[in-house]
Image (tube, rainbow, N blue to C red):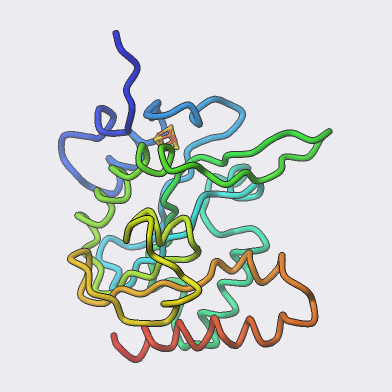
Length: 206
Ligand code: SF4
């Protein structure tokens, strides 16, 4: 049998978050399924008004099996709180559900997913959108934004703007919180404030 080239054959017949989570655990839609990484599916209530989409789980997310629980997740939590958004009110997920990494000694170093990996995983995000039907969709970072809005989209040029999209009434993109941690320490305060300002646009639009 030919290898699948995306996640479509693994989708459940009836879409629910429970069924999606269970079937995604066995997804073999691209080569990233191979252990030791596990599927890290989205998390949040079915009728969340806000969906936040990042790039992919990191080392800590993979170990915990939950999205946004590592350093970038803590950075996001702080920004959400400052913007007046409760994390519990948001559905959090990633555009790629497996941690792509390379091993350096005992460390697992993040590798940016390629377009074909993003495309392979896209059916899961589409299914999450179909179930949750968020009023607002926030795309964090270039991989998620390009994966959803197209390869020519530039987060640096359009961050914090309300964008036209059929995916949700309110759609915007901003930087991934991990970029704040990777950037120069002297820029962190300004970069944190800029992320909060972008999230406030969504909070006010909701
Ligand atoms: S990254 Fe996505 S498409 Fe690839 S195996 Fe994991 S869940 Fe399936």
